Amino acid sequence: MSAVITVAPTGPLAMKSDNPSLPTQPHEIADAVASAYRAGAAVAHLHLRDEHDRPTADLGIAQRTIDLIAERCPILVQLSTGVGLDVPFQERERLVELRPRMATLNPCSMSFGAGEFRNPPQDVRRLAARMRELGVKPELEIYDTGHLDACLRLRDEGLLDEPLQFSIVLGVRGGMAATADNLFSVVRRLPEGSVWQVIAIGRANLQLTAIGLALGGNARAGLEDTLHIAKGELAAGNQPLVERAVALVSSVGRTVADVAQAEHDLRLPR
Ligand code: KMH
Ligand code: ZN
Image 1: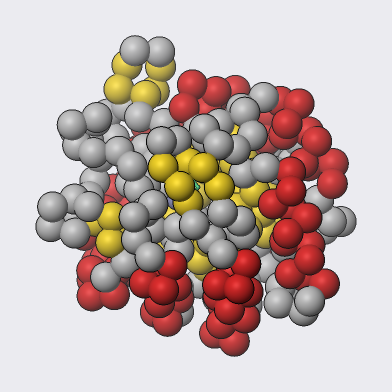
Image 2: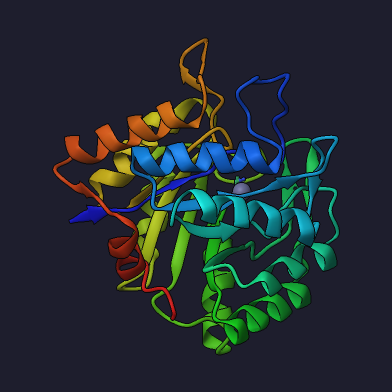
């Protein structure tokens, strides 16, 4: 069975002072994504930054980044509509108008580290409906068990089409802790036929990514989720983290999905 590897090169929080290899500007992100693609990633999960490296939902920056990536490789683009904690929902949701193949949908508000991640129910419904109209596949971000129930309600309201695609996010302060028990309890409750991956933040990234792959899930790799490749050792970019995920995929007897296989496995519209 193949496994889709998504590279998450930048994220909303880290700065170059945390890891100098963090790509923040469009050409840096495009170069990082292209090397991740060559290493085995089939999907790129993107957060954009402005010229001061602050999270932004600027459509021009997003389109420029997408264009630079397309010049370099045919990886599938997934835009984050999480964007950054200080960016208003009304700006974040506009990103789907660029019609990426996928975009994230964060179903609930929550504490997020020292900050607050605001996803009001009516705004989430409106975004889900718009994504459906545009044919942008939502990746549903589950940071806690109740977030799964919120997604199932959206499905029951006809706002999400099956098969649902989930990220099980473990280790955000404010969400579920990064434990195998928490992962099992969510996986057990996913609707039959769902597509899912583990997003394991910080120290448990390697172990929980491995467990997710062994259970039949997909994998995410990159500096958004961990700045380190080993204890006390900064990752020298996104490529080594993708290479590590590739090694995990083969060590559990699976193959790495190329772009065509990923389009099939993720049941992408179009
Ligand atoms: N940053 C991760 C904890 C999103 O960008 O919308 C979750 C994430 C969601 O990647
Ligand atoms: Zn993200």
